[in-house]
Image 1 (tube, rainbow, N blue to C red):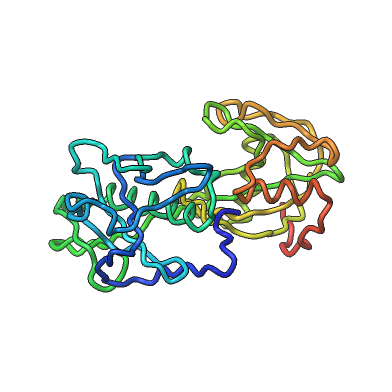
Image 2: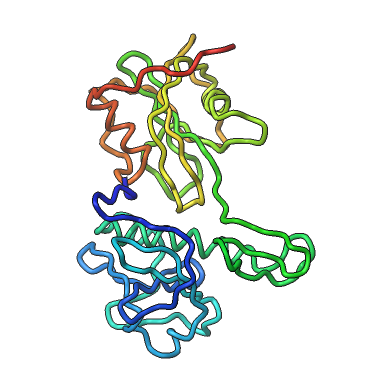
Length: 289
């Protein structure tokens, strides 16, 4: 998955730092990031490469990767899109499959952070301009004291199995056209296990048992924390498709599973694990009606 960085350490502890010429510059304007993708390699500029006008943009320390400090620059005030030799404003679709992983991860996290800062410029309670906290990654209203933290939405990814069969789906009305698993956001008042059962039933009409937690993934492209589960079909395998969410939901035997899934995602890893017949986690959750 794209956040698996090996020995490269991601350090997101809050710090109030100023950029050095060698610091990585994550300059965002709208939905774009100033970067290059020559030969499938994602290159992020150094702060010292930027012209003076860009170095003067609002700038925040974001995190460090492998000891390298990364700074988020807000380019929304620029009259025109910046363009430097070998660099241009790129959307996440332009670099989502690029290497190295640490550059992709930095780009994706910066997108989530900038989206949060942009959406919370004004206090939602009294309308005053928000200020950066002096002690943590948060925005604070200087008038009423409202404190806002980065948005993270929990969601589930569910691999529904039936012996050597796996349920695969395709979203309706989205740019992403590859096969996926059942997925959905957690709702207020639910525990995460009930989210699994509800999402599977809502989208496919199927009931499941023997929930097996696999692992999580910070899917910062949508400000989400994904929680992956395997589970077994309970009862009928007849699918009743939720057509406003899905265009396809069908069973595939292990040897028939198409090689058409996203390798950087938790979804892709879970599909591949089942396709290769690798051991699944043991059920650790008690089933209930």
